[in-house]
Structure formats: structure tokens, C-alpha cells
Length: 390
Ligand SMILES: Cc1ncc(COP(=O)(O)O)c(C=O)c1O
Image (cartoon, rainbow, N blue to C red; front, side, top):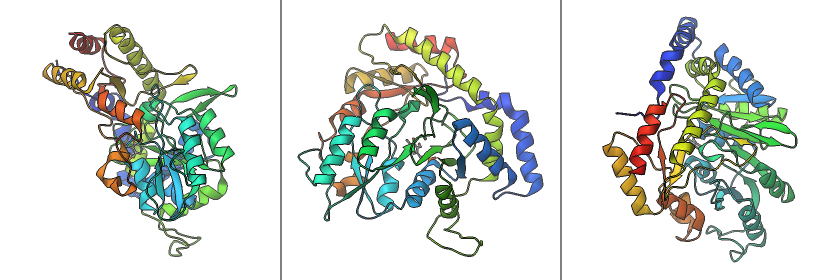
């Protein structure tokens, strides 16, 4: 039995008619840049997430970059990020000359730990690494923003994180690259991913819960001024006129072809989120009794979109045995993430020592992901469970 890690072919077979029709319409119109499908998609994305505005862009990384540029993040600013995430979360901070300050994760949800955030902000405010590990810096840093990540499709603990941010005047940029479609019950209402912070960001990389057929992403905001700034930054800081440049920006536009694909995929997205719940429930039933495995936990009131189904083995050696065994039985696996960002060579200049983010380091040594997508069959899941149990 050969099982795909993510099954985009079965999905395409379902929506081929609509995707092909949408793409043909773009080809025939010749409106490849900012065609009508881009604004159509932006309207639907904002409605879906419950925000006033959505701004399509070229990738999740560009979405984060544009968000920080619109918020004026730059040299001297401390931006708090989890170390257990994809490279891009902290990369955009460093590219803008600001300083990533890493904040360890909660061992159960793998998302930023609000108590550690509180300590990290106090440490920056007091310029005292005895309170919380700080990156190497020459001049004093100003606490400016926090980028909570909704890892593996599960929303971070926004009620706690937003109150720490409010208490310290931090801007909030939600990194929902993995969590489009996730929800949480909060203050008596259902809140969706991409609706938290001054600006939220997502990615439409093909493997994401809502993915296109190339690179794509979006920013979300309720603020009209930030909307104007995001739209300007997206096209080289353009002003009222196309060739008036009032600030620095990037080439951050979302391709019209990708918008056309996403419009077709949005039609079946809710159904796919429901299918992901079924797949996750079946995994919980099949794997729950296996010794030495820690399955994902979804706290009450939250719905994860399971961008990954990540489990922890009991040790690094146990993980490598399980992954080898699964591989031999035709089950692909992957490790998200083997090295936390504070220990990546790219951030060596920040001077973080091994042991400084103990939870991220322990999780990185034991975690691995098994196939997860809406079209995973019960038969395939039973096979995966049998291999893991043996
Ligand atoms: C948490 C997180 N942030 C940002 C990104 C960047 O998105 P993209 O690959 O679309 O640039 C990703 C993508 O993998 C991600 O997982």
C-alpha cells in the first residue's frame, strides 16, 4: 500500500471542471496581474474569516513581510516569535533589521506560551536576560510586536496572548499560515483564524489546508489605514498613481491564476475541514492505545484544521525507529521541525544557547508527522495504525 502524505490529485479530480473553467477564463481574459478574480477572492476570504479586509499576496512569507512593513517594524524593535515554527516567521523580522526574541512554546498545544511571552517582554523592557533569555544586541531593544503562530492548524491561545500584548502595548501579527479555517469559541462567539491582531497572515502554499497551485498568501485586517498601507507595500510602495512611490515596498501581488484556483477550492473548503475532523477522530481512536505515542491535543472550544497530524515518540531513537518502519511499509512521514529556529545557523548571530528554549528543543527531538488530508481512507489509516502498533 502506498499512501500519499497529502493527496492533491484526489482533490483535483473532484474540482477539475471548476478549476479548469476558472483558469481558462483567466487565460482568455489576459488579466494575469490583479485580474477580477483577485478582488473576488479577497472579498470571499474576508467574509469567510470575519474581517473587514483581505489583501491577496504572493506567499505567506510576503504576507508576514508586508504586515511588518505596514506596521513600521524596523531596527531596534524586538519582535516576539516562537522558535518552534517555519523559518519565515522570524526571517521577515530579521530581514527588516528588527530583532527576533524567541518565546518558548506550550508543551501540549505547541503554540507560544503566554506566560513565557510575559517574561520575555519584561526581560526586554528591563534589558535583563536573567528574567528570560534574550538575543545578543548592542543597543537597547523596544518591545514592538508579537507574532503568535497557529501551529499545525490549531489556533494559539489568543485570550491570554492578546491580554499580554495589550498590557505592554505590543502590536500583534497572527501567523495563520497553517490554520486557515481553524476556529475558537471566544467571548460567546466563534472566531476564525486570520481574525486576530492588527494584521493576520496566511499562506496558500499547495500543502496548506487551503492551498493553490503555486505560491500565494493573504493579509487580513479590520483597519482601513492598514489596508491602504498593505496595498501600497504590495506594489513597491505605490501612492495614488502607479508610478508614484511613497514608501519602499515589494512585488507582493497574488497571481490571478492562483486566485482562480482558490475560488474553486473555497467552494469545497468547509466540507474538507469536516473531513479532516473525521480523519483526526479516526487517528485518535486507532492510535490512542499505543504505548509511547503522544497524540495532538485540541483544547475544548477549538477546531484544528490539522495542517499536519503530528505525534511525539517517547525519544529521538524511538522516533527514528518508527519513521524507518513506516517508510518500509509505504507510509511517508516528515519532521516539522527538527531544529528550532533559535538553534538554526541562520540565527547564530542572535547567540541563543542550546537549552535556552527547553520545550521547543524537547518537542523537536521527538515529533513527527504522518499522512493527513481530507481524502485519507479508513483503510489507509488502519494500515498506518497497524504499522505503528507493531
Ligand atoms: C508557520 C508558517 N509561517 C509562514 C509560512 C510561509 O508561507 P509561504 O511558504 O507561503 O511563504 C509557512 C509556510 O510553510 C508557515 O508554515
